Image (cartoon, rainbow, N blue to C red):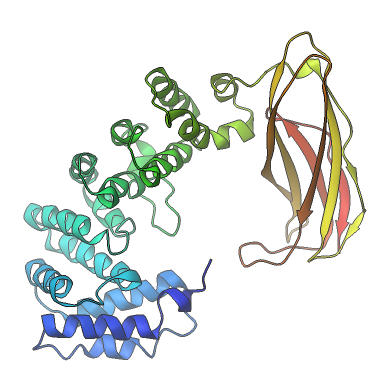
Length: 367
């Protein structure tokens, strides 16, 4: 993942200023010019918000004036695109809500659809969803019929319950299934880009509404095309890790853990310095009389700052074992330093997980 200053940089702010100036020739764009010097030390979303606020300060008037300026910049400035579009779409959504009228709201939705091909408008649409969910979802449902792949993806991605980097839309979480009509319209989309978004969206829903997700996936598998099965597997990945019986059954995984013999996990070391790795091994044998289809994961219990542990499940493999067949499992897990996880020295543990059922964990020391 690139750093914030590689995505929204001083150069991004300067390019945005140059792109907007011909579209607003009477405005000095003072706040945008000042924002160029204020980006250092800010996270990515903070940078987007800073440029959004500067843009709104520099372009007075109501929503119609802002929309005209943005459309003019899009038509006349070749450099108008990329990460500068995030603060632009955020400004469009914010001023439309401040306007308060249905005309501004509907035009803002249309403008986000126009801009989303330059850089996804999925973050900005959240402001409109929070303001009038039903009106915004009706527009998004219409986008599912668009000939533009980016617009169809916006319909799914922008309405995800747990879209990364975005604000939550509480009403989506309170109304189970309110976004499912959008997913129903897109699950057979010809674009993998769109289908991946649909799978991620349905997987988001599984956090709070597993039965709804299994029911939706069951309907899709009853009327599939060649891409439906892999997309459903993507949609159910969290439920499979949790051992949800409905999801396991839908994907054909065996529920009979009593027919499996699983060796205790063994580690190649008991002390692992941060930055290095531990290798673990185990073996699984099918002692039953029928083939056993298995989803095999592993769980790392990370030590937290307060001394407790939190579990994170990692995908390992899937397999079908014939009666009497034995499968050896082996994996190396890295503890290299990354920006998205902080490691705390002390006791950690690893366990194998088969069809959602974890074995006894084996402890080691992270030093």
